[in-house]
Amino acid sequence: MTILNSLRGLALAGAAITALAGAAAPAQALAATPAHAAADFAFPRGFHTQEIATNGTTLHVRIGGKGPAVVLLHGYGDTGDMWIPLAADLARTHTVIVPDLRGMGLSATATTGFEKANEAEDIIGVMDALHTQKADVVAHDIGNMVAYALAARHSDRITKLVLMDAPVPGIGPWEEILKNPLLWHFRFGGPDMERLVKGRERIYLDRFWNEFSADPKHFPEASRVHYAKLYAGAGRMHAGFSQFHAFDQDAIDNQAWLKAHGKLPMPVLAIGGDKSFGTTMAVVAEAGAEHVQGKVISGSGHWLMEEQPKATVAAIHDFLDGPSAAR
Image 1 (cartoon, helix red, strand yellow):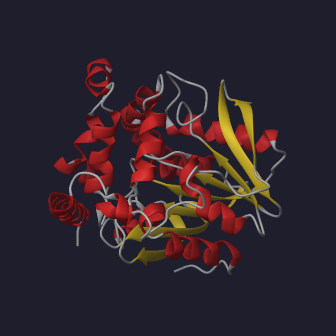
Image 2 (tube, rainbow, N blue to C red; image 1 turned 135 degrees about the vertical axis):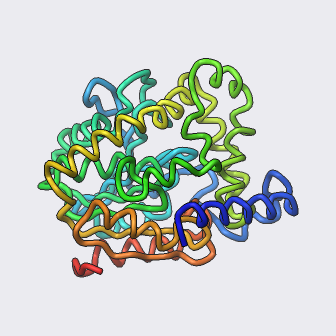
């Protein structure tokens, strides 16, 4: 199955379910698939937050646990809060570091610097500030793109890498992905688009949560309210659009780096939702990494941590704490 067909099937399934279920998940469905450890999106006891100045900006970072470090990078439509279930699991044996990306969530507002090679330096600055020499990295969506740039440019500091359900600009079937009309939002942005979305952030984001879920009911209403409020903050939609606007430069940077330096050397786990990227996630990863394991999460679309948190956490946990075997 090509990536275009995979994404087309996901969107059609999501649209059909949305038509039956309504644009927002009903309140009675919220208990069916809990996405977070607490309704107020609090991280587990023992975590603290820190505002860390890095690479010309300031990132909001949650830190907890004890042991080998792992950095968790969120994507668009979420913030670092998406990682609460995983952070609770990993903190028993790891020091868990969870930043909000440049300009997003509760990090400082930013208007420039969204090229993923630059954002990789944001994360290195966080690691340096926390005296973390090496770390595993787990990423989803746009977090994948930052994580790939980070692992490529600092392969001596990234020990294992998990990429979840999103492409990497310039790597593997990127040009085929760009042809997919379902991904029109890759080119949506700019001052006029920001004006169109202002005050309608929930409407805009619901489209992603609905169409890219296996079942929209599994992206809970509490999560929708929480993230829509954060994305409605000053400068947040600009930052989100800017992440996409940088894709062309990201592709140029990644292709040049891959040509000059070769594939990533560390073990990589490529996770796809079976109603989203599925096995294609491993195809993407293998184009840019030497040692790739693939994992497909059943009953999930794009939003793995919201739709199937237990299975996703288990897959990540087993990879990070297991042997470094290549697929």
